[in-house]
Length: 287
Image 1 (tube, rainbow, N blue to C red):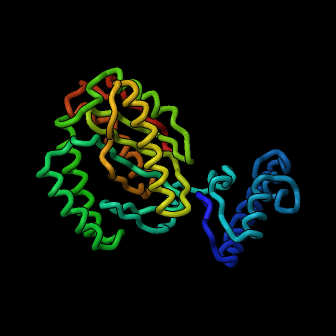
Image 2 (cartoon, one colour; image 1 turned 90 degrees about the vertical axis):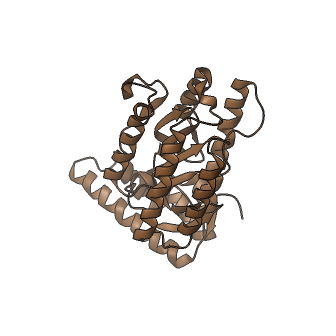
Image 3 (tube, one colour; image 1 turned 180 degrees about the vertical axis):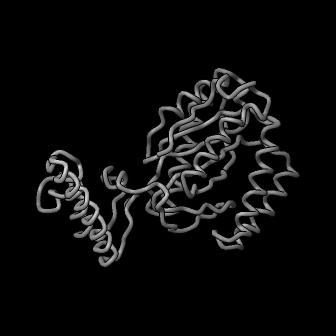
């Protein structure tokens, strides 16, 4: 199967089509009431369903014909119609750490450098990851274990021990600029901070066809970042730990909490007196 394509039942596609038609119709009706029947993107998209040349209509017609969803060519307007908090859980990928993936949503992500945690901490975390794999994703036990894991990662990493390449200001500045411009595989970042031995990220809404596609997107991201950083440092070899921590963000309030956490992180780690004084950070607006 081609990368980015997901085979689905025709009935599911028809149900999805009905939802999109309804949304487009509502947008077209609103535009007409405002005296702008043909001006807005909703009206143009709705006309495409009637046999026009709109990208959304062509994409949906192809999906109905082939019974596949090709998210590589998914019209951007379809995703803009959705709330970033409306994602549906589509599965879990386990690479030692469980990654719960939704079809459309924002994530808080922590990626640490290889060799940045002591062996004892690694063993303790492995036990908790194993426990997390045994409980339902939405359960109170899962929430408690995830909070415990993140707290351990957070307090240990902020000590800046082990391999900490971003103590080098040139490397930190390069990675910060690169993160601000990153836009590949549908992944863009709303907020981030570069710490001495790890990064914290909050994504813009990300559409995923499957848990496997989600993991590929992040592996490519890590590989591209590593090439750039290694080149700047004149080094070779692994930069990042194999896996990473991610959390699907449920609502706008949680999104703000994660962005606030990013802002406070350099101050908490005693790298800066105020968030605004730390140069390797960006804080974006809620989607």
